[in-house]
Image (cartoon, rainbow, N blue to C red; front, side, top):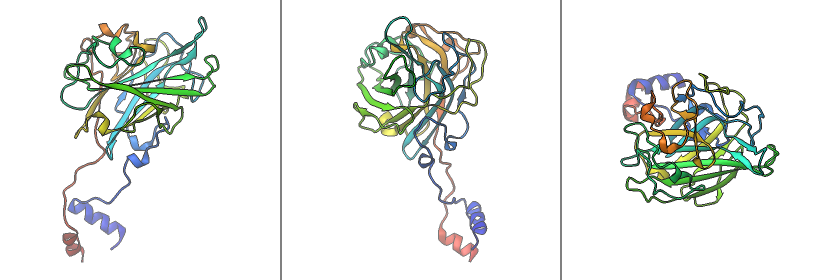
Length: 314
Protein backbone atom coordinates (compact mmCIF):
# COMPACT_ATOMS: atom_id res chain seq x y z
CA UNK A 1 0.00 0.00 0.00
CA UNK A 2 1.31 3.46 -0.83
CA UNK A 3 2.00 5.99 1.91
CA UNK A 4 -0.72 8.25 0.50
CA UNK A 5 -3.28 5.42 0.50
CA UNK A 6 -2.31 4.36 4.03
CA UNK A 7 -2.67 7.90 5.29
CA UNK A 8 -6.11 8.19 3.65
CA UNK A 9 -7.15 4.92 5.25
CA UNK A 10 -6.08 6.09 8.68
CA UNK A 11 -8.05 9.30 8.31
CA UNK A 12 -11.16 7.38 7.24
CA UNK A 13 -10.92 5.00 10.21
CA UNK A 14 -10.09 7.67 12.77
CA UNK A 15 -6.49 6.54 13.27
CA UNK A 16 -3.40 8.72 13.19
CA UNK A 17 0.14 8.11 12.05
CA UNK A 18 2.86 8.04 14.75
CA UNK A 19 4.45 11.44 15.21
CA UNK A 20 7.27 13.05 17.13
CA UNK A 21 6.02 14.54 20.43
CA UNK A 22 5.98 18.29 20.89
CA UNK A 23 8.24 17.90 23.93
CA UNK A 24 10.89 16.30 21.75
CA UNK A 25 10.73 19.30 19.40
CA UNK A 26 11.30 21.85 22.18
CA UNK A 27 14.76 22.91 23.36
CA UNK A 28 14.90 24.87 26.61
CA UNK A 29 17.18 27.69 25.48
CA UNK A 30 15.06 30.84 25.77
CA UNK A 31 14.16 30.99 22.08
CA UNK A 32 10.74 30.26 20.60
CA UNK A 33 10.32 26.81 19.00
CA UNK A 34 7.80 26.13 16.24
CA UNK A 35 6.25 23.34 18.35
CA UNK A 36 4.67 25.96 20.63
CA UNK A 37 2.30 27.02 17.85
CA UNK A 38 0.48 30.34 18.16
CA UNK A 39 0.67 32.68 21.15
CA UNK A 40 -1.87 32.14 23.94
CA UNK A 41 -1.67 35.76 25.12
CA UNK A 42 -0.19 38.99 23.73
CA UNK A 43 0.82 42.14 25.59
CA UNK A 44 -1.14 45.30 24.79
CA UNK A 45 0.55 47.97 26.92
CA UNK A 46 4.05 49.41 27.14
CA UNK A 47 6.64 49.54 29.92
CA UNK A 48 7.38 52.33 32.39
CA UNK A 49 10.42 53.46 34.33
CA UNK A 50 13.09 52.16 31.97
CA UNK A 51 13.95 52.59 28.28
CA UNK A 52 13.05 49.96 25.73
CA UNK A 53 15.53 47.06 25.90
CA UNK A 54 18.30 47.69 23.36
CA UNK A 55 21.46 45.81 24.41
CA UNK A 56 20.68 42.58 22.55
CA UNK A 57 22.66 40.44 25.02
CA UNK A 58 21.78 36.90 26.09
CA UNK A 59 22.29 37.87 29.74
CA UNK A 60 22.17 41.46 30.97
CA UNK A 61 19.33 43.75 29.85
CA UNK A 62 18.65 47.48 30.18
CA UNK A 63 14.89 47.04 29.92
CA UNK A 64 12.03 44.72 30.79
CA UNK A 65 8.85 43.53 29.11
CA UNK A 66 6.49 40.57 28.93
CA UNK A 67 5.46 40.33 25.29
CA UNK A 68 3.71 37.04 24.55
CA UNK A 69 2.90 33.77 26.29
CA UNK A 70 3.16 30.37 24.63
CA UNK A 71 2.57 27.00 26.20
CA UNK A 72 1.58 23.38 25.81
CA UNK A 73 1.42 20.19 27.83
CA UNK A 74 3.18 17.22 26.26
CA UNK A 75 4.69 13.96 27.54
CA UNK A 76 3.92 14.87 31.15
CA UNK A 77 5.58 18.30 30.96
CA UNK A 78 4.14 21.82 31.02
CA UNK A 79 6.18 23.90 28.58
CA UNK A 80 5.98 27.68 28.92
CA UNK A 81 7.67 30.35 26.83
CA UNK A 82 7.34 34.00 27.85
CA UNK A 83 8.90 36.30 25.27
CA UNK A 84 10.44 39.57 26.38
CA UNK A 85 13.17 40.71 28.80
CA UNK A 86 14.02 40.81 32.49
CA UNK A 87 15.91 43.89 33.62
CA UNK A 88 19.42 43.18 34.92
CA UNK A 89 21.57 46.31 35.13
CA UNK A 90 23.95 47.96 37.58
CA UNK A 91 22.61 50.67 39.88
CA UNK A 92 24.24 53.94 38.75
CA UNK A 93 23.80 55.59 42.18
CA UNK A 94 24.47 52.94 44.83
CA UNK A 95 26.71 49.90 44.46
CA UNK A 96 24.49 47.02 43.44
CA UNK A 97 22.15 45.91 40.70
CA UNK A 98 18.61 46.40 39.47
CA UNK A 99 17.17 42.99 38.66
CA UNK A 100 13.47 42.42 37.95
CA UNK A 101 11.61 39.19 38.63
CA UNK A 102 9.25 37.01 36.64
CA UNK A 103 6.52 35.46 38.80
CA UNK A 104 4.28 32.64 37.59
CA UNK A 105 1.10 31.72 39.43
CA UNK A 106 -0.19 28.34 38.24
CA UNK A 107 -3.74 27.08 38.85
CA UNK A 108 -3.63 23.35 38.17
CA UNK A 109 -6.15 21.80 40.56
CA UNK A 110 -8.72 22.25 43.29
CA UNK A 111 -7.96 24.67 46.10
CA UNK A 112 -5.24 27.29 46.06
CA UNK A 113 -5.26 30.98 46.96
CA UNK A 114 -7.41 33.48 45.09
CA UNK A 115 -6.08 36.09 47.52
CA UNK A 116 -2.48 35.48 48.55
CA UNK A 117 -1.91 34.75 52.20
CA UNK A 118 0.89 36.05 54.42
CA UNK A 119 1.97 32.62 55.71
CA UNK A 120 3.45 31.09 52.57
CA UNK A 121 7.09 30.00 52.21
CA UNK A 122 9.62 32.74 53.06
CA UNK A 123 11.58 32.92 49.80
CA UNK A 124 13.58 35.41 47.74
CA UNK A 125 14.03 38.06 50.44
CA UNK A 126 10.43 37.66 51.55
CA UNK A 127 9.00 38.33 48.08
CA UNK A 128 6.20 35.78 48.23
CA UNK A 129 4.77 36.93 51.56
CA UNK A 130 5.26 40.57 50.58
CA UNK A 131 2.60 39.87 47.95
CA UNK A 132 0.02 38.95 50.60
CA UNK A 133 -3.30 40.55 49.69
CA UNK A 134 -2.81 40.26 45.92
CA UNK A 135 -6.19 39.21 44.54
CA UNK A 136 -6.60 37.34 41.27
CA UNK A 137 -9.57 37.20 38.89
CA UNK A 138 -12.61 35.43 40.31
CA UNK A 139 -12.23 31.68 39.96
CA UNK A 140 -8.46 31.79 39.48
CA UNK A 141 -6.87 30.09 42.50
CA UNK A 142 -3.18 29.33 41.95
CA UNK A 143 -1.65 26.47 43.90
CA UNK A 144 1.95 26.85 42.68
CA UNK A 145 4.28 29.86 42.57
CA UNK A 146 7.42 29.93 40.42
CA UNK A 147 9.89 32.80 40.24
CA UNK A 148 13.16 33.69 38.56
CA UNK A 149 15.59 36.62 38.29
CA UNK A 150 19.18 37.04 37.20
CA UNK A 151 22.51 38.57 38.12
CA UNK A 152 25.57 39.45 36.11
CA UNK A 153 28.96 38.64 37.58
CA UNK A 154 30.03 42.27 37.19
CA UNK A 155 27.06 44.47 38.02
CA UNK A 156 28.35 47.22 35.73
CA UNK A 157 29.22 45.00 32.78
CA UNK A 158 25.99 43.58 31.32
CA UNK A 159 28.02 41.32 29.05
CA UNK A 160 29.69 39.55 32.01
CA UNK A 161 28.56 35.98 32.92
CA UNK A 162 24.88 35.82 33.86
CA UNK A 163 23.24 33.57 36.47
CA UNK A 164 19.50 32.95 36.68
CA UNK A 165 18.02 32.00 40.08
CA UNK A 166 14.68 30.15 40.34
CA UNK A 167 12.26 29.36 43.18
CA UNK A 168 9.12 27.27 43.69
CA UNK A 169 6.47 27.28 46.45
CA UNK A 170 3.16 25.55 47.11
CA UNK A 171 0.17 27.88 47.60
CA UNK A 172 -2.01 25.78 49.89
CA UNK A 173 -5.56 26.89 50.59
CA UNK A 174 -4.80 27.01 54.31
CA UNK A 175 -1.32 28.47 53.90
CA UNK A 176 1.92 27.07 55.26
CA UNK A 177 3.03 25.42 52.03
CA UNK A 178 6.65 24.48 51.49
CA UNK A 179 9.04 26.05 49.04
CA UNK A 180 12.70 26.27 48.12
CA UNK A 181 15.33 27.67 45.84
CA UNK A 182 15.23 25.39 42.81
CA UNK A 183 18.79 26.33 41.89
CA UNK A 184 20.71 28.46 39.44
CA UNK A 185 21.59 28.19 35.77
CA UNK A 186 23.19 30.15 32.94
CA UNK A 187 21.45 32.21 30.27
CA UNK A 188 20.82 30.57 26.92
CA UNK A 189 20.10 27.02 28.09
CA UNK A 190 19.92 24.13 28.63
CA UNK A 191 18.02 25.17 31.75
CA UNK A 192 19.42 22.60 34.16
CA UNK A 193 19.30 23.99 37.70
CA UNK A 194 21.96 23.23 40.30
CA UNK A 195 22.69 24.13 43.91
CA UNK A 196 19.07 24.02 45.09
CA UNK A 197 16.22 21.62 45.81
CA UNK A 198 14.58 20.47 42.58
CA UNK A 199 13.31 16.87 42.95
CA UNK A 200 11.01 17.06 39.92
CA UNK A 201 13.66 18.33 37.52
CA UNK A 202 12.14 21.70 36.55
CA UNK A 203 14.12 23.47 33.81
CA UNK A 204 14.30 27.21 33.15
CA UNK A 205 16.52 29.62 31.28
CA UNK A 206 16.50 33.08 29.70
CA UNK A 207 17.63 34.72 26.49
CA UNK A 208 17.51 38.51 26.91
CA UNK A 209 18.38 39.44 23.31
CA UNK A 210 14.90 40.74 22.47
CA UNK A 211 14.82 44.32 21.19
CA UNK A 212 11.32 44.13 19.68
CA UNK A 213 7.93 43.71 21.32
CA UNK A 214 6.31 46.55 23.25
CA UNK A 215 7.86 49.99 23.51
CA UNK A 216 8.57 52.21 26.51
CA UNK A 217 5.76 54.27 28.01
CA UNK A 218 2.40 53.20 29.37
CA UNK A 219 0.47 53.76 26.15
CA UNK A 220 -1.00 51.04 23.96
CA UNK A 221 1.66 48.79 22.44
CA UNK A 222 1.81 45.29 20.98
CA UNK A 223 4.12 42.52 22.15
CA UNK A 224 3.70 40.49 18.96
CA UNK A 225 6.78 39.20 17.21
CA UNK A 226 9.30 38.80 20.05
CA UNK A 227 11.01 35.40 19.89
CA UNK A 228 13.37 35.29 22.88
CA UNK A 229 12.67 35.40 26.60
CA UNK A 230 12.17 33.09 29.60
CA UNK A 231 11.45 29.41 28.98
CA UNK A 232 10.30 26.76 31.47
CA UNK A 233 9.84 22.99 31.30
CA UNK A 234 7.79 21.95 34.35
CA UNK A 235 7.06 18.25 34.93
CA UNK A 236 3.41 17.85 35.86
CA UNK A 237 4.49 16.06 39.05
CA UNK A 238 5.75 19.46 40.28
CA UNK A 239 2.27 20.99 40.04
CA UNK A 240 0.08 18.17 41.33
CA UNK A 241 -0.18 15.97 38.20
CA UNK A 242 -3.16 17.77 36.63
CA UNK A 243 -5.15 15.72 34.13
CA UNK A 244 -6.41 18.62 32.03
CA UNK A 245 -5.59 22.20 31.15
CA UNK A 246 -3.85 24.56 33.56
CA UNK A 247 -4.13 28.33 33.93
CA UNK A 248 -1.19 30.69 34.41
CA UNK A 249 -0.81 34.32 35.47
CA UNK A 250 2.60 35.80 34.59
CA UNK A 251 3.82 39.05 36.17
CA UNK A 252 7.03 41.11 36.03
CA UNK A 253 7.86 42.81 39.34
CA UNK A 254 10.65 44.83 40.89
CA UNK A 255 13.22 43.02 43.01
CA UNK A 256 11.69 41.27 46.04
CA UNK A 257 8.18 42.22 44.80
CA UNK A 258 8.01 45.72 46.22
CA UNK A 259 5.98 46.80 43.19
CA UNK A 260 4.21 45.18 40.26
CA UNK A 261 4.77 46.60 36.78
CA UNK A 262 2.22 46.89 33.96
CA UNK A 263 3.63 43.77 32.29
CA UNK A 264 1.11 41.02 33.05
CA UNK A 265 -0.21 38.16 30.91
CA UNK A 266 -3.08 37.96 30.30
CA UNK A 267 -2.63 41.68 29.67
CA UNK A 268 -3.97 44.61 31.61
CA UNK A 269 -6.06 47.15 29.66
CA UNK A 270 -4.16 49.27 27.17
CA UNK A 271 -2.42 52.22 28.74
CA UNK A 272 -2.24 50.81 32.29
CA UNK A 273 0.78 52.23 34.15
CA UNK A 274 2.62 50.86 37.19
CA UNK A 275 0.38 48.97 39.59
CA UNK A 276 2.21 49.64 42.84
CA UNK A 277 2.50 47.32 45.83
CA UNK A 278 0.96 43.90 45.10
CA UNK A 279 -0.86 43.88 48.46
CA UNK A 280 -3.26 46.51 47.07
CA UNK A 281 -3.86 44.94 43.63
CA UNK A 282 -7.17 43.31 42.70
CA UNK A 283 -7.21 42.01 39.12
CA UNK A 284 -11.02 41.90 39.25
CA UNK A 285 -10.93 45.67 38.86
CA UNK A 286 -9.29 45.42 35.43
CA UNK A 287 -11.02 44.42 32.22
CA UNK A 288 -10.16 41.06 30.72
CA UNK A 289 -8.57 38.00 32.27
CA UNK A 290 -5.13 38.40 33.83
CA UNK A 291 -4.24 34.76 33.11
CA UNK A 292 -4.01 32.43 30.13
CA UNK A 293 -4.88 28.75 29.66
CA UNK A 294 -2.49 26.00 28.55
CA UNK A 295 -3.74 22.64 27.30
CA UNK A 296 -2.26 19.45 25.87
CA UNK A 297 -1.04 18.93 22.33
CA UNK A 298 -2.90 15.64 21.79
CA UNK A 299 -6.21 15.49 19.88
CA UNK A 300 -8.33 12.44 20.79
CA UNK A 301 -9.22 10.25 17.79
CA UNK A 302 -11.67 7.41 17.25
CA UNK A 303 -9.89 4.10 17.64
CA UNK A 304 -10.09 1.18 15.23
CA UNK A 305 -8.16 -2.00 14.60
CA UNK A 306 -5.40 -2.90 12.19
CA UNK A 307 -7.42 -6.02 11.34
CA UNK A 308 -10.27 -3.86 10.13
CA UNK A 309 -7.86 -1.69 8.17
CA UNK A 310 -6.20 -4.69 6.50
CA UNK A 311 -9.57 -6.18 5.60
CA UNK A 312 -10.77 -2.94 4.07
CA UNK A 313 -7.64 -2.38 1.94
CA UNK A 314 -6.62 -5.99 1.20
